[in-house]
Amino acid sequence: MKNEIYIGDNLTVMTNPVFEKYTNKIKMIYIDPPYNTQIRKSYSDKIESNKWKSYIEERIKASKKYLKDDGVIFISIDDNEFANLKIICDDIFGRENFVGTFITMQSQRSNAKHINTIHEYILCFAKNKSKLHKFVMKRIEIPEDKKMIDKLNREVKKIIDAEGVNIANKKIKSIIKKYCDEYDITWLKNYSNVDENGNIFFAVDLSTPGEPREVNIPEIGLKLKPLPTRGWSSDKKFIELYKNKRLCFKDGRPYSKHYLVESEDNVPSILNFYSRQGTNDLKKLGIGNIFDTPKPVDSLKFLIRISTKKDDIVMDYFAGSGSLAQAVYEINKETNNNIKYVLIQREEKVNSKSIVYKTCEKFNITPSIDEILKFRINCYLKTKKLDKDYEVYKID
Image (cartoon, rainbow, N blue to C red):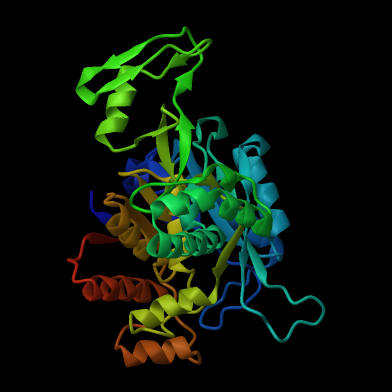
C-alpha cells in the first residue's frame, strides 16, 4: 500500500465505508488532540469542557476498531484535560488495558502565576494488553544511558590506545564499579570484558539446566567435558555463536558475548523530548514558523520504535503538520522497515493575524492546516530526494 492522507473531519472519515479497510489493521495510533487551553495562536484548540469530553470520546471510540489486537494508542495531553481523558479511555478500552503514562518535557514559560508547568503527558492504552509485546529499547537509544555508555567507551578506548586490550581487560572491572557507583546502577556490573576490537561485553554462561553432557564439535574445534550437575547449550547454538564471532573463553570455559551497545531496558516513563524540538524540525527543512507547536519527530520515532514492527501501519487522525509522517520516513531509513502511515486532517483555516498565516503567504500555499501538512511532507521528500509516495483523499 501507499501512505494515505485523508482530508476531512476525522470522525466523518473514520465512520466512512471507504475507511473500513483498516479495521484491525493499525498497529499504532498517535494523536495530539485539542488541549482545550488555546495555547496555539494560529488556530483554535478551545472547546467547552463538556463538549470536549463527548468530542474526544466519539473519536477515540471510533478509532478503536482499527487497532490490531496487539495495537496501542498514544495520546498527547496536558494537565487541563488529563483526568477527563484517562476516564474516557478507561471506559473505552477498559482499565485493564491501561499501559501507562509518559511524561514529556516542555519549554519553560515565564508567565506562570503559581507553578511553572514544564511537562505534558502521553497516555498509552492497548486494545488488548495481554497480547501487547514489552516496550524495550536499546540503552544506547535512551538519551541518559547513551551519554554514560559513550563516556565509558571513550575511557576504555583511551586505555586500549595507550596500553592495549589486555590491560584494558584487567582494569575494566574497577572502571565498571566506578560507573555503577557514580550513576547508582547495577545492570552495568556484568559488562566487565573487552574483546580484541575494544568492544565492552557481558560474558553469558553457556551452561543450562539439564543432564550433564559432553560436547564434541569438530567443525569448530570445540570439546567440552560434562559439567557435574548441569548441561551445555545445544551444538547448534555453539556453532551459531562461533560463526558470528560471539564465542569466547575464560579459564577454558565457553561464554557468549553480549555487547554493551546491545543492552536493552524497559522504556522509562519520563522522556527527554522538548516541545521546541518540533519547531527545530521545521527549521531544518527551511520552513520554520509554518506551524504552531509541532510535535518533535524524535518523540514520535521513539513511540514508533517501541510499538511497531517491520511492516506495520501507524495512524494519526489529528495529523497537524505531519510530524508522524516524517518520523515514519526516518525510522524506515534507519531500520530498513516498511512502515506505512495513514493521516487524517480536516480543512482548517489559519488565523490571518498569526505568523503561520504570514509564513503560508511567503511560501505561496493556502493558509490551512491540511495544506501545511502536505507542504511539510513534500518539503521533507524533496530535501531527501525521495519520490512522492502518498495518496490524498478528500471526504466531505
